[in-house]
Length: 71
Length: 479
Image 1 (cartoon, rainbow over the protein chains, first blue to last red):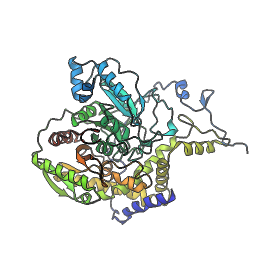
Image 2: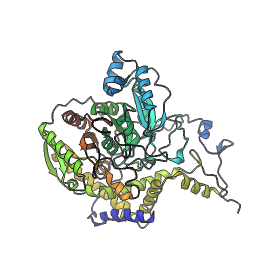
Image 3: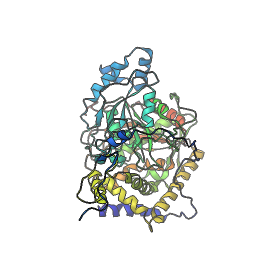
Image 4: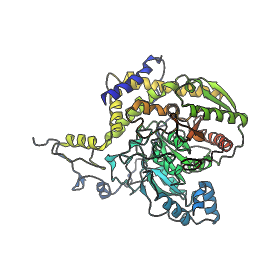
């Protein structure tokens, strides 16, 4: 995969030839305005429904291996 | 029963509304057709039709790319990492189609996380092109294009980040529309590159594309980048192209286009002139750098979006003996396919300290230049036109070993995505592939200024009528 990635980067590098010093970057094409709403509590999904999708639910939470596994 | 399947969505909806066609019978006919899928195009099929209800699409079955979340129905994005995932909510686009009376007929196969141009990157196997089962349907919405072209669904929706609706529509001989960024809510669409992703219809004709767009478009409080199309979308009805100006980008015209594709493109230019349209070359000097900018920006955004798949909250997990980090790593190693890994690495590299300005920063500036090129063209022209894809459908496995050659499929579609403008691909004719073989469909792309969908659909409708593309897979001298 290293060879493939190098090939892609080589192609991408063509943009280094362009004169872009005074150009503004575009991160988004839509003019965005801030959207505000009242900070009111709303119901969320039931916990059990959410946990049903988890690979390893336990005690109403997501169980994961310990961050410090025994070695 | 066979006759029912010949109706366009607009025709079927009219008959259902008039009481001349039972929606149950119509949906059932399509369920039966869908059950004969030999293209590996469906990942899931519905057991029943929509509940009774009214609306402009009452009783219409729709095939939905498996990138759209559907409540309680498996949604995988073509990835092993989401195998068995059943979302808790439905994407806004799909919900709106449901509110218009339509029902989900099935979920369609796709390139994993919409990354691909051949549908060979699906964890659930490649989709076959109904015109020639040895060839790809295009991607990433390959399943959605194949079911419509192959008579397995009357219409479908997909997503387009750099060409993923238009290119498969072209390779399968159907209509594919990428609306303006922001026309349709992205809520519930599994994210690939959030500043580019946009939902759109894949249909048999331009009128059906307009019907689906009107049902889906609009502002959505769940997607702050959605703005909708203020005037709404009417059924297209234009008969000619008088007074309209079409730009052929000089820089894109001379690139490696197959002779057959070029011939169909040139015939289509004549048709535009016959309809009264005016054609001239226009400079689009930065469009040829679209692929470079896109393959920095899209992977960069993907590398951030895909960080959420960690085997903790949903989807699959690889159990390991080690710690939580090892679990993340094993899950991602087993859950993501090669192309997804390739793009995560590219994106992470492009965003890394020391390389950010050279790659991501410059790519964003190229994006500005491409958008400015289009703005300059649209000061003099109504549309920019190109072939949709440089080639007709290519063979399965032909480009899987050369990612860059695969990326070049998006050469004509990526610039519009970067500029956020709407573009449609309509079937323009048939051409023999390089190297010979039965004739395959060729797509013709028209692009318009942001939110000019009505004008785009009207022009595409007039051109569609003039072209009169009637070919179907398996029809004619040879399938």
